[in-house]
Amino acid sequence: MALALSLVPSFSALSFSSNLSPNPQTLSISKPRLPRDALFRRSSSSPSATVASSTSLAATAGAASISTVPDFEGLSLEKYVKLRLPGGIAAQKLIGTGRRKCAIARVVLQEGTGKFVINYRHAKEYLQDNPLWLQYIRTPLVTLGYEANYDVFVKAHGGGLSGQAQAISLGIARALLKVSENHRVPLRKEGLLTRDSRVVERKKVGLKKARKAPQYSKR
Figure 1 (cartoon, rainbow, N blue to C red):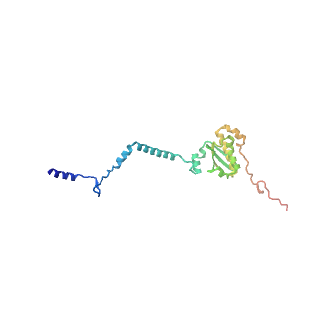
Figure 2: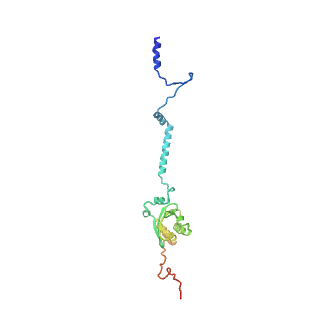
Figure 3: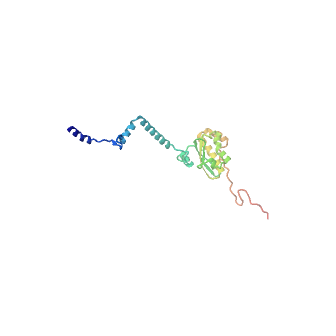
């Protein structure tokens, strides 16, 4: 009897994490929850988690490397030209200056696919899609077979579009001479290295234009 009395306090001191349900015949036991740091250690120790983490790191590194590559296609034409010509036109090697009437064109050649950019605009747009003017600027490259080997960047001012187109042609021909001196013979044969010195004759006093006189009246 003394032994039974001594066991009662010991059983009452024990604490159970089990929760008794209202039904006396069933017993529900709650699962113990692991701390977060233990879960992290367990997941990091597994090989599949290691592969997944390395894959995610490689993906982020690849995305970072792709973002650092400059996207020329998404840029405006002006920014594209400035990226292609660091330091401006004067800092480039293959440069030529052409003149015609009052027009002056500074031309830069760079290895490319045959793009023509004039004053930060496409050549077809700038020259109003005129076939004759477009033929002027393409003739030097077509003569040497370089129409798909070089990109042409031009700054032109003065005169009209016809004079600027012919000035660009002379500038491209002079720039091609810096690529190779052997280009002189075929370009000279086509007359592409000759500066056309013809300009508008000045107006004369007493005349309507350079030579046009007012109508003569006898009385």
